[in-house]
Amino acid sequence: MLSGPMVDEWYPVGMISQLDTAGRNTVLMGHPIRVAKGIDGKAEAVTGEGRALPVIERYGHVWTSLGTPNKPLFDIPEAEQAGRRLVDVGVVRVRCSPLRAVENFLDIAHFPFVHTDILGAEPHTEVENYKVEIREDADEVWATQIKFFQPQAAKSAENGITTDYMYRVPAPTCSVLYKTSPPRPGEWDVITLFVQPLAEDLCDVWPWMALFDDTTPMTDLIHFQQMIFLQDRSILENQIPRLLPLDPGMEIPTRADLTSVAYRRWLKRHHYTYGAQLVAQ
Image (cartoon, rainbow, N blue to C red):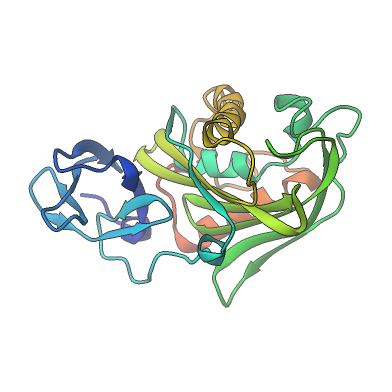
């Protein structure tokens, strides 16, 4: 039987738009579950033994938990902001720790090398100083004051721009990115990574976006973000060790890794260890 604080967290298990009464079988932290639309039109989730699970429908996805969440799902105010397009990107299965998937999303330094001529390009490889903190009032990891030159910061971008970034980690397997909106430079586009832990070394990744973009076809927005993440997948599936090390001596961080370091400390502080490696092997 699973135990520990991660059991009581909320996790995405499907898209609301794809929910029907026939339902779909999936797995959450090694446990088979079934997600379906009930007779009242609302989402329902049950374990393989028939135990009803708590359910929330938000940000285009169905969320559930194997335990008893002691707090509501984190808030993304931009989801309610008028003028934004809400984009369900779909799902990508990745053979890696769910925590590895989140950490990779927080990594800025790989942009020029993995997302070449899109999110980064040589010789613009230096990560300038930025601020990282664990905001105790919200109990979230935040990275702010990040700037990075990007040849195509978004599907709507026509030219290369220096993009402002903020990262937020409100839950162990979720991250929210705020970045310069090319059509509205004074606003933030929101790109999220919602990760469903299937096992400690296997996950489904559900990206979701809230964008200012009135012209790009929805299919193009989805394909652009899927292309970015598929470029990351090959890196993630070849990382060793497969689980995310929380021992500070196991991997040597650089200045560009400040967000990763804070994320790992935050995970360790809360004993969020499903998908983590605690001791060097």
